[in-house]
Length: 232
Image (cartoon, rainbow, N blue to C red):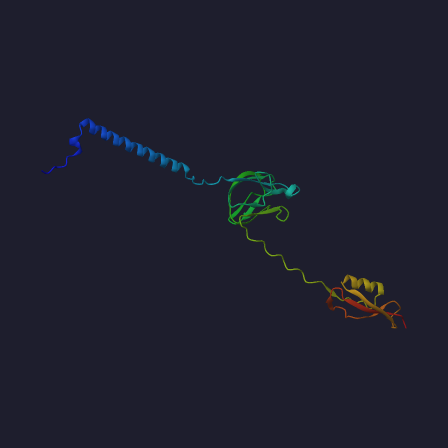
């Protein structure tokens, strides 16, 4: 005799089937709650996206050249003179207290200024990039000025080559007294060499011969010999 399989529903009563369904749903809800907690914890532990840095405050000042820093400066929030900044966007509170001066800021991507004939208190929003920036007064640019670097500024230009060694341009000392001849040689960066005496048509004590021709360019400190007249 062949026995046919029977479905679970035929062996369980309605109350038993209902209990099984509730138990399964309860376990599913528990699994969903655990999964949701894990996802929430993972989201909480993830690093938050970096927010853009707030603008850094700087303070610019210009007045008269007889004041400290020649009457013009740029300082940070701590009151220190700005010499180097990181690239980024900055707010600059500008105080122009003189109707005869201006605050002019120039550098890569920046060229902004106050007027010479006005007193201004304003705020600039400036984005600095790598490079060197200068600030100055348009009326006294050689006196009232300053500078600072931003980021990886290019290196400063190499120093100029040293000047060539000084030369001695031999002066004419013939016809001069020995004392004056020595003075002229010293002024020309030459040195007095051997001094001898001899007879000549010039009066005594006067140089009548020198070892190098006048105008000759010789190394600094070259000795120049002379002969001093004894008269006839």
